[in-house]
Structure formats: C-alpha cells, structure tokens
Image 1: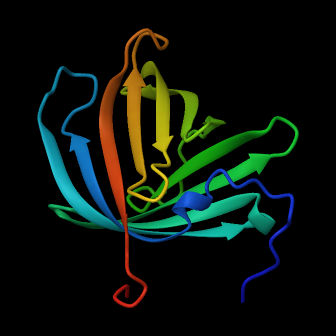
Image 2: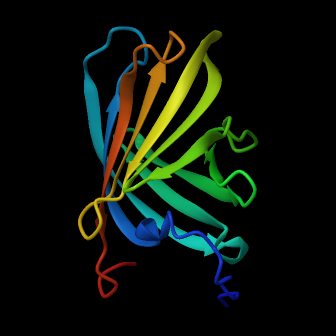
Length: 167
C-alpha cells in the first residue's frame, strides 16, 4: 500500500524514483595513488517514504566476487532545506555510514561529510546529476586535505528498467 504523498514534499530526488540497472565503476584502492578500476553491474529500486520527505534506495551490487545488498536512506530537513543521505551495507549490517548532508542547485546535488578512512580524517563528497530524461549519475570522492583536492573513487550510471521486463 502506498501511503499519501504530502503536496509540500520536495521533488529533488524524484528523478531517481523507480527501478534501475546500474553500471558501477569503483577504484580498487582509495587514497593510495591507485589508478585501477573495477566495473560491475547492479540493480537499484527507489521509493518515497515520509510522505515524500524521504526515500529509500534498495540495491544489489553485483561485485565480481559476489552479490552484496545495500541501501541508501535519504531524508529532507524542512528547516535547513538540506538532505541527509545514509548508507547501509549488507557486509556491515549493524553500521550506518556517516551521513552526507547537502542539496541541489539546478540539476546537480552536492553532499558532504567529515569521516575517517584507515584512521585518517577525510572529507566525503557525493555528487548527484539528474540528467533529466536520460541516465542519472552519482559519484563519490574523498579528500585527505579538507577539500583542497578530491579523488573520485566510485561512479554509478543509472538506466531505467522497462517495467515490463523488470523483475
């Protein structure tokens, strides 16, 4: 059953609602000077929640070594007008990643967090590009120097699944 959608709900992430085939590209090692990437496919399905003030994205990451389930949870703060995005990975099912916080300017959304990698403080950046009508994309980058430089380490390009063939 779909619960009612609030008419005042933000529409920023409406472009990604639905079912998708995903082309992933992941850097093999982060912030080590690595230049080798692994590509793989995946599936993603995103639905509204919180009356449209949030959404949940259910994922199957089809890594070469085997499938992994993961989820993104997004919620909108009416006061700050910012989104928070949390990541939950099936390999660590009791740990939500530090949320990235931000919003959209036009068709591009930028979201940031302070986190750590191997005990080192880093900044995390997600960039969403709506590419309205085509293939939305997402990328993740880390910065070891408070945002002076960024290393992109994961990209995703989405292709909408035909509802007749999606299963």
